[in-house]
Length: 326
Image (cartoon, rainbow, N blue to C red):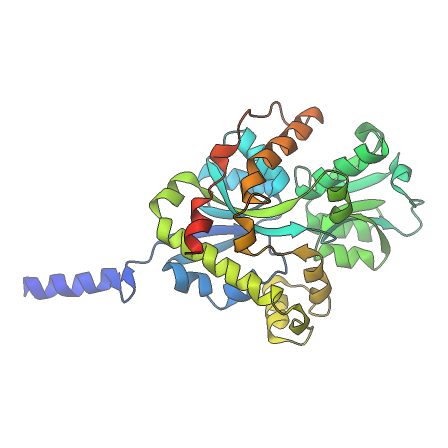
């Protein structure tokens, strides 16, 4: 009887795929991107064997706090807050790109605000989530045209508050991402996108980061996660024309994120999804430590962080992507 009981108990602890499912919390921004389709289909759970709790964040600073406290093991994080987190010594590693940011993050100016060019921002009220990639792009744009940050009233707001402030006429412009960007564009004009600020020397991207210890302890599952993310992106990259407003994929993205299905195809065009085979080369992950250092040094000069590190190599993990491609 005792042996029978132990056998039944053991059966409860093990699934058909192996050990008892591990609870893992993953942070994301709720962007209308291909990974939302895989998330809806539970593809990440199937690939990793994890019991995943997806937690949506409004800003990179919130993600940093969650990573530092151990509330999340894996998270989506923008390149600017990534540099901030690494500079502060948060225990994380970038292991792949989520997407390179183009017009998906843009500076939108209110109709009638008297802003026709970047120089007109002097004295205006500009909302942005401070510490985000959008904030980094805004600072880069101001530096590019020689407008001092102190001459602009920069208001720290998460995207949902930006939408409300816009409707109330409390701000003149906002540098923000989707889907709020599409909402304020109804009564505004795109002045500049992150694709243009990248050309001016201020590139931005969203990446996937992981707690260093968790990555070491879950090497196989991390490779499976990266492989699944890459497959989700490739489904779009190989045939973007198929992702129309009435397609099943776009309808799924809309349901997952609350975005308007009619706007999702245009939103997707505002990102660049880099195949993992390209990410592992020198142009992306190979250059990531230098990109993080350059971003941190800019943020230090702008007074946003106290100091930049000499070396950001420890904050980049190339083994996960390499394993995912085997």
